[in-house]
Every structure is written in structure tokens, then in C-alpha cells.
Amino acid sequence: MQHNKWHVVRKGYLKIHVTVDIKKKRILSLEITSEEVHDGTMLKKLVDSASENNNHVKGILADGMYDSNNNNLRYLSKNHIKPGIKTRGN
Image 1 (tube, rainbow, N blue to C red):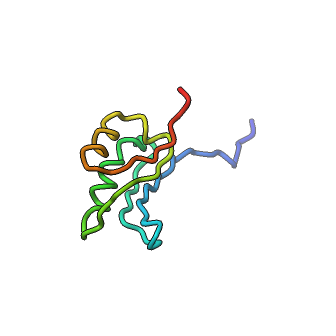
Image 2: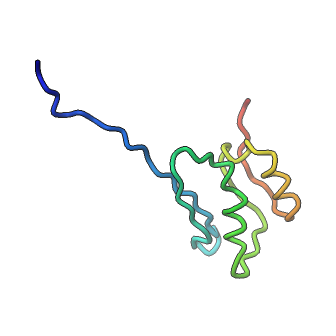
């Protein structure tokens, strides 16, 4: 019986969620999560964190994973933040 010396153990990965001021080219907030955390659950935390220190968030651009939570759109509307979320086909 041969022993496989290349046994691979999957350890998972980390996800980096970043809020950026595209005009000033600077990071406003950054969160690191495990792969199990859904992107849509991070929107409010990212925007709240970016809004600190007098950064007035007027609009966001995000991929389709952020449209999965209807609460996100309500939150943005309530805070007068224009959503630019690429919606998914389903």
C-alpha cells in the first residue's frame, strides 16, 4: 500500500469586504469574514462604518450578492443612499 504524501486539507478562505471612496481613492471601511458569511449581510455594517468620521455616503456600487437581502434596499432608501447594485437574473 502506497502512502500519498500530497494529501491536501482544505482550510477554507477569507473574504475581504471593502468600502472605497472612488473619487478620493481611499478606503472608508474594511471587514474580513470567513467564507460562510454572505456578502448581503455585510452591507449595513460597511456603510455604517464608512459613514463615520463625516464621510457622507450618497450612493453605493455593489455586485449582485448584495441584492439578496431586501432589508439592504430598505436601509439604503431610509438613509437616502442611491443603490447601484447589479441585480441577478433570478
